Image 1 (tube, rainbow, N blue to C red):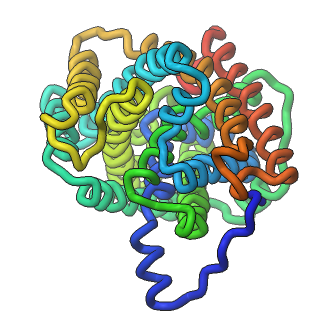
Image 2 (tube, rainbow, N blue to C red):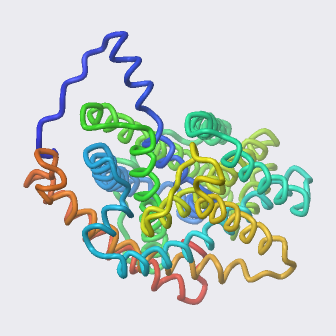
Length: 423
């Protein structure tokens, strides 16, 4: 696919040890995309459209793998984060505007994650004035007191808990024959409601912050060109696992809420509505998955924002640095967490409007990021034999054009009457 044939990996103890040393960034980045907003989107799609949109998650997987693989490859070959490369190749002024847009989008996204914390904990009877400050304190402490290796282990541990959605799907007792048909036989419709949900699924898949985080994480982990073939396995594995989780979220709500004609408008309503249809265990597993995903993403989003802005402006950054060595990095990280959590706690805060604005910012930013990536990865002086091949460029450009079109469409439909966040 990419230029420069990757090394073949032989299954040996040494090879396994090297793979375990490299694994992490790809799995973490893809799974954190199933955050509060993503879970809400998949839940509402399952509740409103049943199984009919499951087929769309196959091309979504391909798009996710294509984009994430390019980021991992650039990080491994150049040893630099995406913001670094954009600044060096396109100038400081343009990078500054990109970082401002990323900061605005990610603050809104972080607010959505703390809203997810509040919603999930309320199902367990814990008010948001307890759950949100505790979650904010935990994610701040995790990075401030941790090392890269320790933080990554916590993030990988959080990925394991996404299995709660698979268990929820099994407890919902879906009709597996219908599920299989929906995946392999697309049921396409031109109805506005169907198109809005389809755009919502695609729009939650590739976000600007993901590209910055993955490339920075690959660099921070010390993955080089020699280990890139293993990093590719990490990326593909993460993308596939993340989409499998998304499939089970849709299945859970399709097999229960849609089947019984239950109308819901939020992920909290979806979790509560599962109780009489699939039992307490299904409801609690669903709510626990939302809590895990929200705390996970509330850690990652401020972290990737701090990484990207510090890279773009040439400041010291990294979890392995102390506050004295990287004051801007830690100030940004803690500041975003504090602001996002505080807004969620304000009575009557316009969270819906905030989600819309962050979605708009993501939609405006994503086309630039994808195009910059494709320009950078095809520069011989940067990538050498690891630049894109002609075939991979065809796939990557086609993916990019489709993603740009659908993401911009998502921004437009977000302002249509009756369209909820992400739908």
